[in-house]
Structure formats: C-alpha cells, structure tokens
Length: 388
Image 1 (cartoon, rainbow, N blue to C red):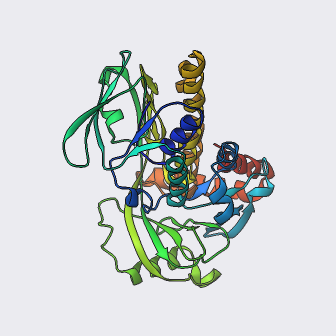
Image 2 (cartoon, rainbow, N blue to C red):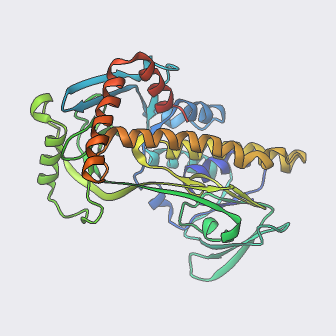
Image 3 (tube, helix red, strand yellow):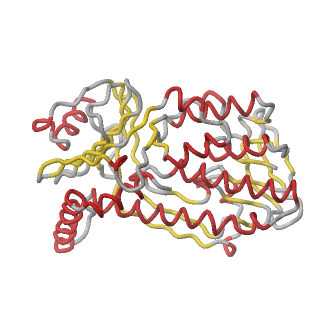
C-alpha cells in the first residue's frame, strides 16, 4: 500500500494499516520539520476524538488539548452566546493544533516501525485501473524512482499527484467559489474571549479562534486581490477591534502576528473517490471552506473508513468496503459542505448587485435572530457544528 501525503489523513491511514499488519509506506514531499510545524486548523469534532481514542492515537490531545463548547456572535443588534455543548447531541470540540496532532501521529507511526519517506515528491500515479499501480517520484537527492503496490491512497491534497493523475473523463468535479476571502492571522497573543468569536460587521466579517493559551487565530474578510502583507500589524489589530466591536465588549489582547495568508472560501468535491486501485482521501477528495472547521475532521473520518475497507480486502478477501468507500465518504462530505455554506451565508456579505445585497443582508439578520431565539435552530446548529 502506498500512501501519498503525511497530513492527518495519510498518517491516520498509515497507523491503522500498520497496526493491522498491512504493509504500507508513506511518501511525503516535505521534510519532517516542516510538517510538524505548519499551522493548520485546531478544532477536532467529538467523533474525531472518539475515532482516535478507539485506535490508541489520542494520548497527546487528551494531555494537551482542551474542550471547547461556546460560540459568541457579535452583530449590529448586540451579542449573544451559544453553549453548543449543552445543545443538540451535547457534543463539544477539542482544541488541539493540527501540527501537534500530526506530530503525535507521525511519532507513533515511526516508533511502531512504520515506513515514511520524507522529501519524496510523488509526480504521477500510473496504471490505477490495473492490478498493480505505480507511483513515479522524485527522491530527496533529485533522482527519479518508481514505487509499486496493490493500492494507492491519495492523501496529498487538491494539487497533489493523485488528483493530477485522474483521467478527465473519469471524474466529476463540483466546484463553487463563494465569493468571499479571509485574511488568516496567527498571533502570539492569549485569547481575548473564552469562546469562538464571530463578528458580523458592515466592514466585513472578523473571527477569533483560540489555539493555545498563548496563540490565537484571527480572520478578517479580505479583498482577494489585496496582498496579505499590505497592512501593518497595528492597522490589522485596529481593524480587528473595530469589526469585533472592542469598544463595546472589551479590547483584544494584542501580540506579534507571526503568520498571515489570504484564503478564498471555496468548495470543491470530486466524484467518485475510487478510481480502480487509487483512492482519494482528505483534501484530495474534497476541499471545504474553513467557515465550520470540517476539513481535518473529514480527512480523519475518511481515513478510518478506507483503512477498515483495505484490511477487509487485503486480510480477509472481502472487497465490499472498498466498493462502498466513495459513497460512504461522500455522504459525510456533502453534509459538511451544506453546513459550511450555511455558515458562509450567516456570516458574510457576499458581493452581488445592490438589490440582491440588501435582500441577502435581511436574510442574514433573520437567520441570526432565529439562531439567537429558537431552541430548535440552536439544536440544529449544535448538531451540525460539531458533527461530521
């Protein structure tokens, strides 16, 4: 088994296969230090924690992560809080930076004797519809090589070799650009509130998401064509305070901004997710906007679904799970995409004609009021916000 990519999907899949006695190797284009330090999402769904627990992969997150269950919404009509941990199914998030989870998963895989090749770039997957596909690679020293296996799992993202190798007539791509972009900021600053903060403002959306006691993620709705580095740190903090109405609800705790980048809110789903002996997992299967923190959770879930199916096939000769992998994963993907789009429409003013923009603004206020006052709407929100 060849696994392309050492993100959450690839490392969970590798750990589960290795623990089941399935020979596998992970090929990762970056170096070990890079994948252990690149900052990504940090909200793990309750089902993700249960899954990692089930396979003995949750020791680090239980030691260093912390549960989270409150959202605060700030609008022109005031603010309100939802303790979503007491709504819906009564589930909470666990806040644990993705780079820490990747470090845990990688350490466990290597310590158990798992094989991983860093700085090995997959170039193409060949012969996916045959009995023994191969992956052409560029090794760390620059020389070409080829790996062969019974199956290949593409966990290498939307621009990776797995997606690039698909025949155009074999795949349906569903894509939507939501017309909204964020400037993502990582600040060496303690959280400014004990909740995920969502601020809806005529100047644009702003968001506050704690990562650790000393690091906080912020978002600003941002012109996609504007360079990420155009504003000074002081101006960014001033804008965050304006949009989050700090004059009314208290100042933000400022610190050095150590990372910034523009993110376009897009949805991208491929169907099917199986192509002969090649399977798409995580961002290679679907890209979801960060508006509802679903990406890493979907990746881990898909990895477990595929791992179980591969063990059934390779260890027991039962291929039913592999035949069902695409349909089962897409069911979760589309449900998450639906909620993500709902969140985008709740939080943002999307560029449209003047009349449509006013209409959308009224709908957004109505949705927010329903979320503030309706218990059934709150239960629906909680179930889908944490669920995957």
